[in-house]
Image (cartoon, rainbow, N blue to C red; front, side, top):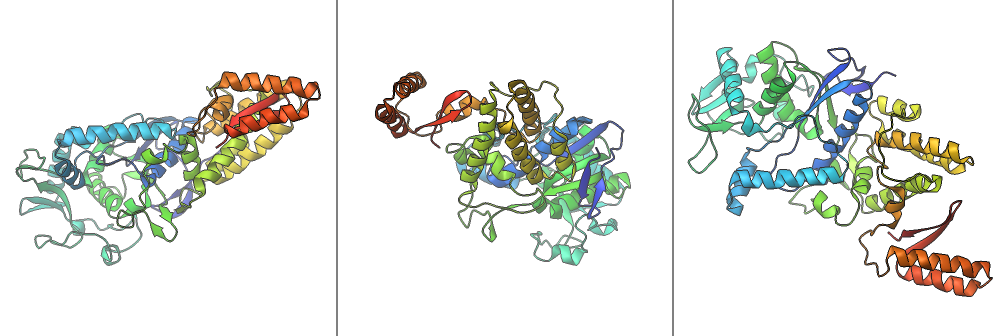
Length: 462
């Protein structure tokens, strides 16, 4: 089954063909670690986690996701909190790892940091200077955009269109307003490294060119990130790398996910609508947040509505309910069962996750109607295998419904089981009013009873 990808570079849907048969090299822009991750940061992590899971079904994948740990925002945050930069970045990188793990995002194969690649960055810049693609101006090293005739090839616009409305630093020492920084000077109280151009630090765009080449080689298969990175970050990265390699692009397929919106606007601190993953996890399981992030196609904007998490919770309850009714137990562990072709078909169609989720509900319906227990368990295994490609349904179905969901519970599981058995005896003896009293007592403790082929099941009210 062939994989089709919408390639930002060409603006078209293309069949995926790796550079080396059977192997894939993928790079995704990761976090800038100066604060907790918000849901906008989480969307690319989740989207490209699914792509990595899908690719591993057919290829040997090397997945690199970088960490930006030197940046002007990081400097400002460290100063504001009066702590060392290294302590700040370590704190928030740990928090990022914990939050993404809670969302079911698997670790990349390699997670390089900018500060670990300063020597390689200096060598890369020196090469660009020698080739005539960069110049020194007032202790800055600038990339000369006019030296790259294909500038704008990724975004599909010319330089005037690109600069209109873009946040481009205006400086008198630039040859062209679009020229961008490769290396900048550092003040005494700012982080910096010695170089041939004085003590300083790298610009934003150069880091990815260097880490791609260091860990994956000169030309890679897939480069991913949010749509907000197309310009200037990815456009500038492509220009640097292309000049270095004398190629149109150092990546064959560029993929970009849509942004998270609130109504008609984007998330922004000034509007006060920043939603931190860390805060959301105090109210909802990570899997609920993950599913909410998958409710629209990855290339489309995601409209974050007040009820999006409640809706995701209800959908997962239905899917886990099918697993629970089937009698399958425990957490998911891969047992080499092939995922359903309907799920693979949807994901191979430019990662059409919404279509794959529709297929999951179709499979859940078939699972609920299956009468033969052996067939039901086989279907449940395959159902779970398909869900695992989406990073869903990995929890124990029983615990999904019975573990504390954040509400104050005044009754433990042992007492609940005893009351259910007592209620069943009363019903057998015709004592229906007394049995209803037990149900009412359980409901007052946020415990709901549900009948199933395997007997009475209980779950905590969401």
